[in-house]
Image 1 (spheres, protein in one colour):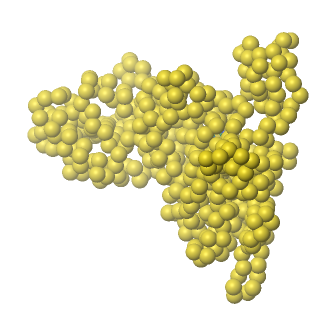
Image 2 (cartoon, helix red, strand yellow):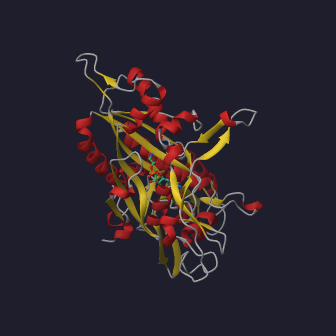
Length: 446
Ligand code: GAP
């Protein structure tokens, strides 16, 4: 994990937030390549939800909702984690995650493991972030920053029945920021207080809930594998009954083998009719599906794949991180799936003279029309390649003296290091063709 954190900072993926003021625990800012990578992750998710199917619609709901929404959803009463204080070191820990925490005085030990540790009884701590709305702070002005994007979907369910002309089974998907006042954060962007979620609520006739639950387990595993995550680092784990969230009758987590062990990447839950029923009761509005032809009416059940953008990005970075040796020199390389790579192609003139930069710029400007490209003429060619390898650029184009004679360039592959000569006029089509090819992590060998 330390290597990922240091590469992320060095190459402008992720920086600790507010660093000039000493940082704010567990807040991170995404730099240029971080934004590009994150956008690609979200883009592939939208694509899988919207473009490759015709039963899901998109939503972007408000972060601050009516506070009644969070009372109805159960978050005000039940969105808690068990908290313990240590009277000796004055730190707070999640009682159910002591084995993931470090003792405040002896970081090699867990809280409660040394004779000096003096932990209180566990008590419930609500994770909702509160703020007030309007210029006067008073009881009625309290609102919450959403702790999940899901509720915005339930609040808009009726609109989708009307304008979307959908009948179950159908889904509503959204991506957006969520906020939780987590007791313990850490492990870089794995658990933070402000993060982005990609959630989809799939409304189904109640008797069809189980087959759709299984459908989404399979779809979501395939999504991660299709984007190059090694299958032996990915697994599904069903929640034990005592682990289930207050709204769930069944949940399975997609887990990834992070450097900190197997951890949740995404939760896929059967929420039953919990949310629509709760909002119908509290709002007094009918939240049900009525079949106008048959008169049949029912409250759909909901299958929810809920993923974290930041956590997915961390898994993609971890899975891609590699070190090898080229001509006796150590190289760090991100073997990202080309579709996720922040930059698809780098254009590099071999030398900064003899008309090479001008031709390279022309090639770059043609390429950037079609794919995210980067132009770099500064420093030795080997160093420029190392830099592109570290940000995971799958292809490098070198312009040399021959390019000026016959308008061909060298195309270098990040993983195989194979170099081929190719006509400038064919370059963009060739790269787009390569982007469409199936891809398998070179870390799997063979
Ligand atoms: N609507 C259901 C829900 O929010 P969740 O398991 O609490 O379920 C879904 O969250 C996903 O959101 C998680 O699998 C994880 O990827 C991400 N996530 C949750 N809390 C997070 C945090 N504090 N920091 C980063 N990502 C988080």
